[in-house]
Length: 256
Image 1 (cartoon, rainbow, N blue to C red):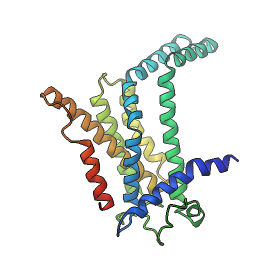
Image 2: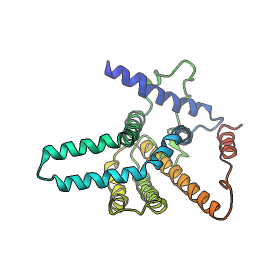
Image 3: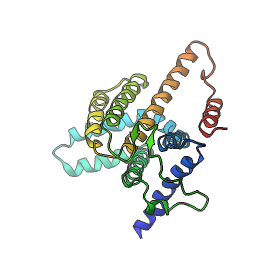
Image 4: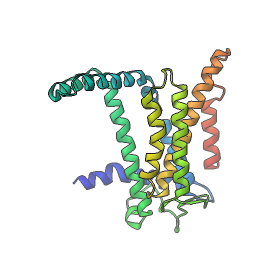
């Protein structure tokens, strides 16, 4: 039963979205390009969640400081420590739930991409296509511009993804309203190294997904910073019209 729910609720929609975007491309079809469009759509859908997460960053730092304080205060009293931690999480219930949702979404991404690109779009998976999604012409082009085979590990793409993660974390620390803490710098330096070794043997499709996500996150951070600078110089809003940009990007990808 749980396996069927996993297929119906998670795998099938994820798979159909990718194949639908792949089939939409006129002429040259490329799963890497389809994955880029898929990530862009996901980021747009999840933009409100990103805004809420940004707004909750001060509270997230307060949680970390309060947890560190009670761990030091009750380090020899496990029962009192448990109660103190429970009180802190209850106090910031909304922030904790938001972070849990973000981690759940990341876990779903990881699991779905591992299954889809690890298997390589088998006949069993393609049989899960909805009636309105056409069966893709075989053989499918499971590469990005023939540079990376998305179904096998890619050390080069793994390295690019790790470096991209470092850049995003660096700019996040640099642009955040609060002064970056020691923990922020530890995460900035060690997370890319850990990510490199943990994901070294995963299919390149997953690494490509993360690389595109990191690129978009970097552009969003850069856009937010440009907007701030523009306001200081007397400009009223962003230098780029987002609606016009997204419309142009859609027309370029879909040939409209």
